[in-house]
Length: 201
Image 1 (cartoon, rainbow, N blue to C red):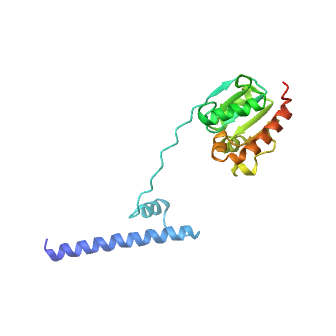
Image 2 (image 1 turned 60 degrees about the vertical axis):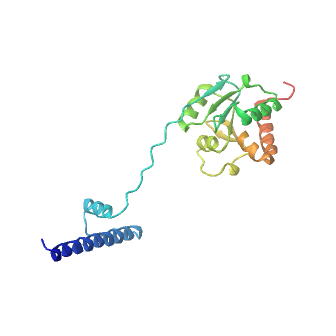
Image 3 (image 1 turned 90 degrees about the vertical axis):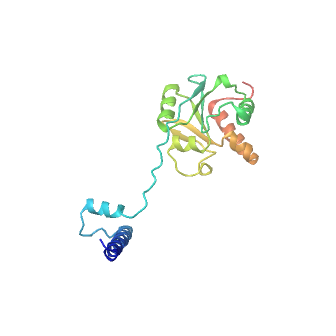
């Protein structure tokens, strides 16, 4: 094969690839505009869309989070911890101070983490608490099926299957934003009143 023929074939190949790329971009653009009435089969459309376009990276599936539970079964108050830190670290130490201010002990409450909605529902069904306190945005959103930020539903009672739920900030957030401590204490005072807990026992 001569140099002239090789050059011609390479030129045709480049033109073909460029044409396919242009056509693929055109198809994608039409699809974005809602124009789907193109006289082309579904399988062909799929192939054309894939030609000359970079492959999309598929994120790896999220690993299932383990479920943890600690404390007294069937306690009056169940805390659902977004972070799963419970009584560990600085946030755990602050949580213990909150419980002490409420005249409560770790042994007198139930606490679980928030791996997913099914795990939380299962824990609630098993323990049947009188009051549920969600610590942090993830726990509150999962339990109450909210997608809005925690600030928009924190500080007032909601209901889950007839059980009162108080969403509040996680102790870890209080370490980062100490100004929120007052709001959390006001939330806990509502919980104490609803659960019949007084500072005198």
